[in-house]
Image 1 (spheres, rainbow, N blue to C red):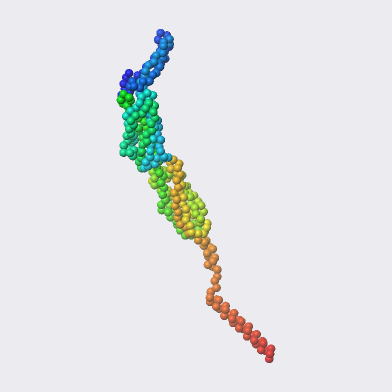
Image 2 (image 1 turned 60 degrees about the vertical axis):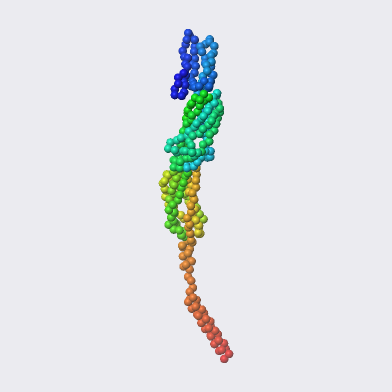
Amino acid sequence: MKKVGIVLVSTVFLVGSVLGQKQVMSMSDVYASSTDAEVVTTYVPEGSAKKTVSYYATPRLVVTGRDIKGKDVKAGDEFEMVLHLKNESTSTKLRNISIKLSNEENQIITTSGSDSIYIDSMDKEEECDVTVKMKAREDLEQKNYTVNVEYNYEDNSKNSFEGSAAVTVPVLQEARLGISEVKLTKTELSVDGKTSLSFKLNNMGLDTLRNVTVEFSGDTIQEISYYAGTIESGASSTVDMTITPDKVGIDDIDIKVTFEDASGNESTYKDSVALVVNEAEDEVAEVEDTPAVSPAVLGGSAVAIIALIALVAGIVKKVSQKKYE
């Protein structure tokens, strides 16, 4: 046997022909302490009896996977990660297991105050789950991050072994959008008029916003929509729309913005702006143009009517007097 670092290696090949008899290749394996014996049958030349040889396989601790409690890991949030471990040895109990977690630039750290985990022992072929509380740095870009898992352990004879694995943690950035510089060229207009509504859509997060769509609605206006597309992190997009009212009244213009993050999750942002819609100007003008009778005219007409009545009365009187003469 040959020791390489902390691993003992022994390789046996039986290839070729001896005295015209066929032979087959035996096997290659890794060995460690005699406390972890694995019995393997090796075939020898035809006509001979089978022999058995004891191989001593290295006790292996492996990380079989990981789970993250909760749906997503968002940048800046704490979360719990469950590591699934297994002692793959069929005969050796592992002892004094020490596990250390690490990653580049402390992108994801443990929140317990220590990045090491200690397990007293794991029986042969035993599986074990370890829960670790962690936190993703707030300024992380949305992508998968690697957490390195390094571990040391001993077998029954206190021989030391080590191993490593890597697990991925997908980190999401919270999509954040805001509206600023909302302007109406006219806050009050007639039902047959038009006004321009403009504002800025601001990406306030570290994630790119996709499929950004703006919808305008209200009791006094026609519903319209505007597609802004993609807005990169820290960037803005200007919206400038013509609003045409179709009903008289005092009401808010509702602004609804929908957008998606990198994972396709949809979010909504809402805002509003007040608008006053009056009667059409031509209708108001018709009412104003209707001729009105002034008091002076009314007064003059009354005098004329009284005079006419008096005149008629006088004529009737004279006719009556002549009749009786």
